Amino acid sequence: MSNQQLEEMQEKWADEKLATALGISYDELHELVWSLDPNKGHDGAIYGYMVTFSEESPKEILNKIEGIDEGYSVSLPSCFFDEPDDEEPDDFE
Image 1 (tube, helix red, strand yellow):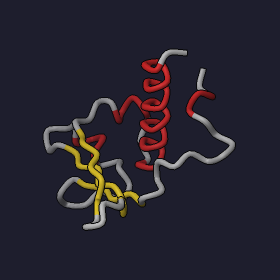
Image 2 (image 1 turned 135 degrees about the horizontal axis):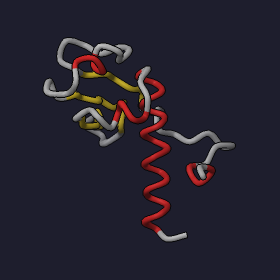
Image 3 (image 1 turned 60 degrees about the vertical axis):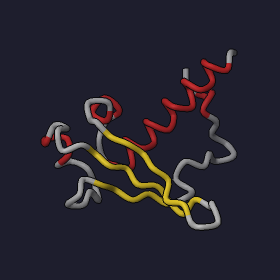
């Protein structure tokens, strides 16, 4: 398996996990314009993540997102993208 294939599988795993946490489908997530930024402390440690959606994203999908705030953002814990020991991204077919 090439590095590119592994990266693509990891990205798909992360996107599927994010979509599930937001209460939307994987396909709906990909209809949105969004960014993911780490919340870093002065020590460089990541204390969480902020997912911010563009106001230009489809409103019918934005309205489905669990926990979205007025700024079209959702906070995630620092461990959100940690992989459980028994679930590896390369388990996807």
